[in-house]
Length: 129
Image (cartoon, rainbow, N blue to C red; front, side, top):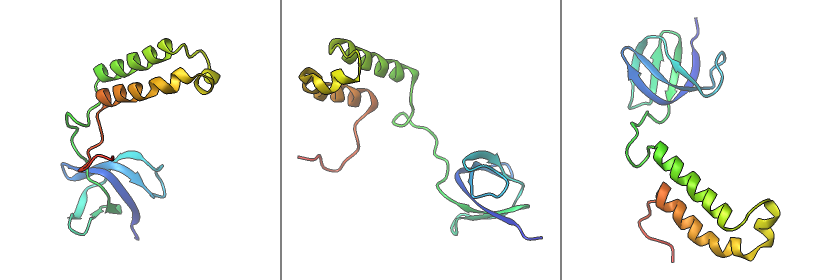
């Protein structure tokens, strides 16, 4: 019997199986979170894994969330409050106000800075001038 082939992203070993998001599998929808059948051969160097039923190309492995990548409910609330304040302060009642009122653009720089303070700034070796 010829084995199915698929790609597994966000994968990790759990017991004698892999768990991750599958792509290109003929029977499963792309992006489905799956646990594979038992591992027959795992070659992380070659980025392949053969299970009882399928041969997987291994994409990016699972990465534990860190303080830098974790979205907290507190930050979601802060972000919502920041957006709501900008909308109220600039009296944005509909989309045309954004395009037709100078104060919205004038205040956008401070608004964006506030978003970055909540969400975080991009990690660059050098800032753009």
